[in-house]
Length: 324
Image (spheres, rainbow, N blue to C red):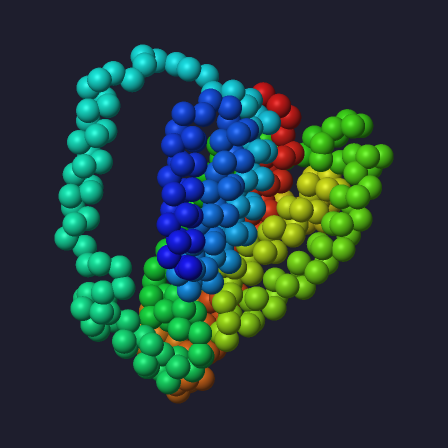
């Protein structure tokens, strides 16, 4: 049954990708992209990757769609045709490149092949020794936070750098006076939305720290918790207005929190160096697994701060500007 579901989802992804390529209405493209993310989320669940599905649902289907729609308010929903149309040479080059990629993938090991290099050394070590070395049952958290903590630090810096790029490109004050009847704040018409948001926003805010501190035992962690927190604040801004969101969490405060998150992660590595261990070697905080658990808790907090603050910050900057 799962195989049929996977085939159906993969076919749906291919169909959506083709539709997006030929679509000129950017609003429809944003909606199709959100559907694409939901289909990917279902695929990740079928692949027994709930952590990735968690992130895809929050960021791919949720926050990214909202930010795209906010950006469309500045650019318009119709794609403007410019330049020369595609030529036969361009189509041929694209086809050759695609065939080259397919040919190169033929040397990759088959999906789930137990003789694949990754399944012969790395994966068995993580699965059999992770709990004893790191002290937590969730192998995914052990890998992301400890075994490959350098990579996760890089991803956190990338998120922070993306926020800096957006702030520099857009610039200007993020807030502007709203007009009556203008989305997202419409107190006279959005009674149902406000009632639902009043119920779900506090629940989501409580869910974020649960996912943060329970990531060692179940799907979750700093990235997922930060996405949930950012999603809750964005929902608040969509329903009650970006002006109220700006008063609740000012942009200046979010910039400080995002910066402190990156510094918390990187500073943890500097502390381990000062204590005589390697960069991000949590054994500097104590014998295993106590030292590893302390280090993971601190760096996950840094990821949580950066991701949650950056997502809210981007929404405030996009939604708070007028139309082009």
